Length: 463
Image 1 (cartoon, helix red, strand yellow):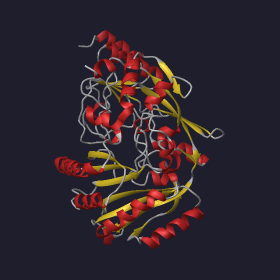
Image 2 (cartoon, one colour):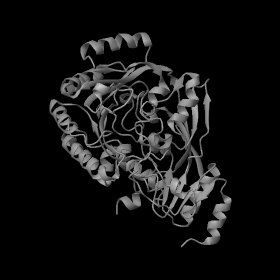
Image 3 (cartoon, helix red, strand yellow):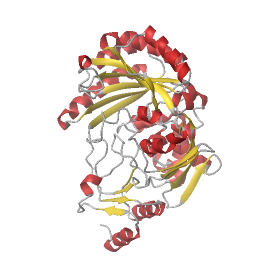
Image 4 (spheres, one colour):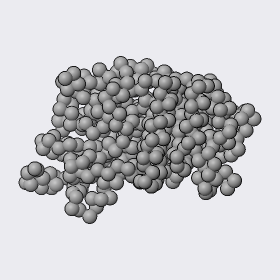
């Protein structure tokens, strides 16, 4: 039981809001992106500034509370919330400052990528992120971060220059290549295990208008298109990005009526080179594998980043599974087609995100993110608005994932993990895992930050 005096002192110390179960805003404060997550924290500290974060960390530690950290709330595994304990909600920390001379951006921990795009696009600048603009900056970055600009400019963590953090003892530190280098190494892929990042400093790049958007082909052509894509993306220039997907075409605009409700395969493109070069490159694609629907063309980068936000709003039921993939064999393609033919619901999908190109220019031990030699990050997503379909989408995703397991690397992208156990986590980090354990022991020996894809401290890990 919490000491009521200590609780009132904590509440009074906050410049932000302490939300408790009896408060009218509590129910909404417990909502996260995945509508399948139903957790009831004892309190939610909606922090107004870094001082609030420090106070909340100290209060959780001193009162032995389970602690969860919420940035954008997109954790499909539900790691933005906990039952009974304290949630540190960063959503009010939304400050952004662009330095156009240095081509950097300082981003506070509650921002989404839509916030970043809004701030950087007027300067004709961007940094690698994901494919959905409502995703939180913190969660995506700490797991590695891959998306439309990855083949050209690397992972999000490859563009992280520094971060400000609150540690388990309540101290505030800056991490970079020059300060607290071990911690800087760990947060670049090691998740939220080591502290709360209150701000990130990213390198920006000249990105304004890109040539992008989806192309779709009939499902009957999936074998041909996948085989062509496999060879194409392996040798394409780093300016060329395209993720492959299976989908059921939604019955509404911008999709033409004759394609509604059809199962199709597609590639969503993003070419970040010159538009003259793009026209030439895409003319070759269109001639080699003519699409049934072609929506690719010049558009502002933020428009591509937000293109699918309305299709997958907050509150849907989600279940996903991921693999890293080195090669796409004919046998694997056949299994993809077999399971994609059974897509259970309109929004369920499979994506193959290319993570070659510039990602391969960084060594596997230079950051905590280990898989620097693979070609794709695969995500099988069961998605539906109806909770009654939760078992259906989960079963499909699991069976699909299990079928492709023999054709995949041992690990997968940590941001695509559900609750999959320590052995799977070790596989994801490979020979970086023991170093992460040692750093966890140094900065969070009592595992205060454990509502995450948890790396235990050395003292606990070897028991």
